[in-house]
Length: 239
Length: 162
Image (cartoon, rainbow over all chains, first blue to last red; front, side, top):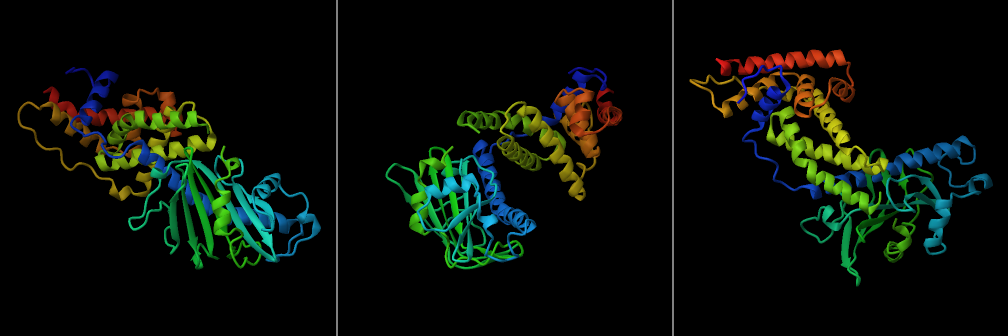
């Protein structure tokens, strides 16, 4: 070992190396664990985006005087010129589900990713679309069920199925209201499809009551479970 | 982000994990804490790379994230900061493992920023200017932290030279 002065770079580097001697290197889960945790963070952020994006949309509409506070009726000006994203999504969805407007961005990689408000019969529901590069193994699987859905704190029921082409699809539904962050979320259902290295996720909520609500909720989520299961397999949703 | 870029990001995480752990251990002095720090850092790197859709200079991004996460955590949980206790009296000629214990003890007595400066300058081999830029401090501050850190190390190994 060199007996050089501690001010010399090689000597200091050597000493730091000594501090590492005998320290076992990490042996736990590697990159997969990192990506799984990142996926969960993105999923939580996406859920959090719902309230913020709705707030931004609401502020914009109220600012132009076209949407009364908490009022579902809007003037013609507010109805005109729907976002192109909403128009494109509407073409993917079955007819008659209501008027769709994009009200917020969602971090994702799909061309349809976003937060959409669905206006129908005086009520407002929401659709979240998000596509992330992810595999099913990246998501935690609850011990007592075959789903990887990460829906902490809810009593949501989840059904998992393997499609004929090998893709895995998980359908989750919550029929009860849930409270959190000053809002009360009405029943919702979601579907997640693992295909071609991506997780395609769509959440259909029947609205929420809270400061940022765009209006009263719908009686039921804007898409039925069958419609959700069908839409999530649309190849157009993938990057 | 394309699939190719995603694969590159995956490869980066897999290949750099151990190197980041070494730096993290020198910063934290605890294997468990170092593993946590590396995990947190790599998750931030993955999220950041996907958000910005850029993969250039991931190494520098990871290094910056590691050190800043460490300093921020120490700021929040400074009460958890503790040295390795008293450096044991070592009779006779010290052996290599004793030097390691002394160096770890010396690092543990330094403040988080001083420790970060030493690790960046002498383990990660960054220049004074690069270290200052990464830590967001003046070069003169880096130099003073370096001097104090080296003095601590010098004191720790002085007996070895006897």
